[in-house]
Figure 1 (cartoon, helix red, strand yellow):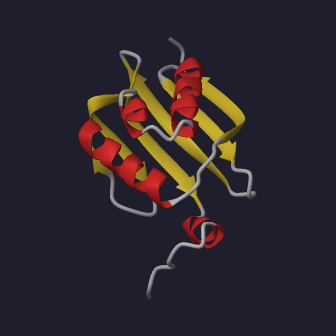
Figure 2 (spheres, rainbow, N blue to C red):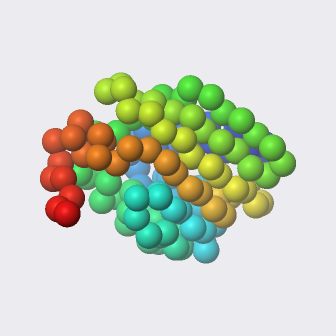
Length: 119
């Protein structure tokens, strides 16, 4: 499959808020690095991360753009509350082996009425 098709599967799994479904799209040794925190390594840990995030916030990914080059795909997204971000995905054997995400974490926490980090 092409990166675009795989990203469409990822968005569908994300919007279903099913941590097992989304984790199945990752290689067993994948790395998910949301830049506001340390990288999460391994499918099992990625599933735990998504499970925790889905339990604590209402998240919806609306696709703005998908770009692809070789085995890489880039997703520009927004949510219904106006937050925007992007994710970079590297694929191997139709699985995500690396993902890096960028978005304004402070705006996200405020929108979701979640605790803000202490300085």
